Length: 426
Ligand SMILES: Nc1nc2c(c(=O)[nH]1)N[C@H]1C(S)=C(S)[C@@H](COP(=O)(O)O)O[C@H]1N2
Ligand SMILES: [Mo]
Image 1 (tube, rainbow, N blue to C red):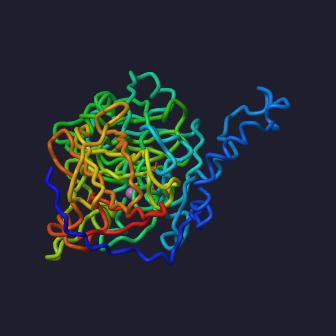
Image 2 (image 1 turned 120 degrees about the horizontal axis):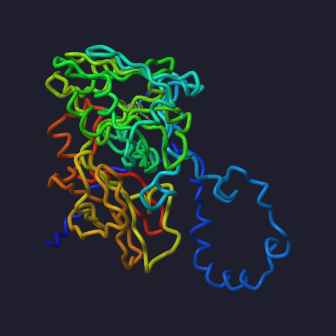
Image 3 (image 1 turned 120 degrees about the vertical axis):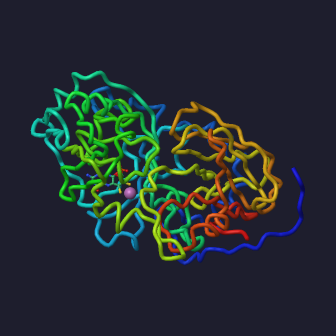
């Protein structure tokens, strides 16, 4: 590890737009910090209402909800990205989560035509096209096939897309929150294709959604047979309507757009369809005017979730936990490094919790903060040896016209008062 002393240049985001709730951290919250130890002693001696009265009974909450004190832990949208909420996106509150699983009610949502409210008794899955025997399955039919359980991340290819040209959104919820990590239960698509009998010239599949957008994408047959799932459960319970109830396609490690929700049909063909979502969208315009297409795999990426602009440090120095998430569409995360000085020096972080293929990994860096400003970064390396690039490295190859597939290293500027802002270093 070489020590360099040049001070990095910081390009700060404008602080005009404070997004969402939970950000109004005036001086008060931080200034009052030193008084907390003494105040804590008073509170331990006080008798609280909850120890003097009976609580709710087991009949009060047939479906559980978080504590009312957690009411700010919600998905949020960004006003200027939401011309119409039925064709928009909201973001996972990554800075409020820990471990690797995203709770069902906090998984970000991306809809092109709103949330379809599908009656499962009237829902069917058809397999047609280049097959020996076109089939139509009911939900009950699907549940008679052998099923599998897998934890996978889903990342929208547009995640961090607003940051291509510079630091913009103040919070990892907004810069990185188009990702969730869920345990799916479903039937391998391979079994259903085998049941229908794919003809020898069947080289592609086209999943179609039952929502009003009739979302369609072309997926090569090798991927369909390798690990795609037709899923009906998330984290043990039925899919949420937002996530495609009663049936969604799971396309591990590949861009979220291909994970068709409210899945109603899979057509088998001999070539890709070149539909809207794989031509005018989800292609990356390079500097020379050519576009990359079929950029299916999600490259290794990481972000520090705490501290971050929505989650400032509330103490002035001393024992401090830095934590974040890392994932790769090509396998597991082998290693995450953390920098406190904008990428000059790197130290290995500790990966904790399950290390699963194409799943989010949780990392920690525990250190003694001296109270001085920090330029925090994290850098992931996946099981193929691929290392997450800096934003400068990414722009050198891909230019600045892109929206999709921004996996560049994120920088958070932690100020001496504990507040954090989105910046870029050069
Ligand atoms: N039927 C259908 N499937 C869809 C979409 C949609 O609008 N309709 N959006 C896609 C996009 S762009 C993404 S990123 C993911 C988002 O999944 P989520 O809402 O579970 O986060 O679903 C994909 N599948
Ligand atoms: Mo997406």
